[in-house]
Length: 89
Picture 1 (cartoon, helix red, strand yellow):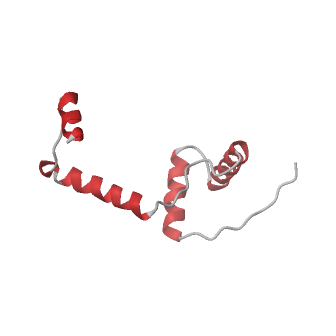
Picture 2 (picture 1 turned 30 degrees about the horizontal axis):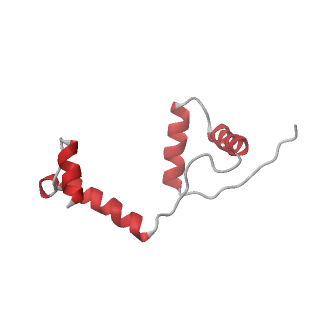
């Protein structure tokens, strides 16, 4: 198998953090990049979710964060019958 070089531009801080992470996993940057490329080839695409959410989904995520920060402002249910009664209203 012949080998080929690739050049990638990356923020220096990200590079240093990635090198530290990969070293802690017992590999160097070249091995990590090769692992990613092989995973992409095996998967037939990017081997993790890459997505852009629409405005409605972003708003839903923001609402969830609001609910987490202020749960007292939202009604919760411990009884399924009560939930269905409120839904029927």
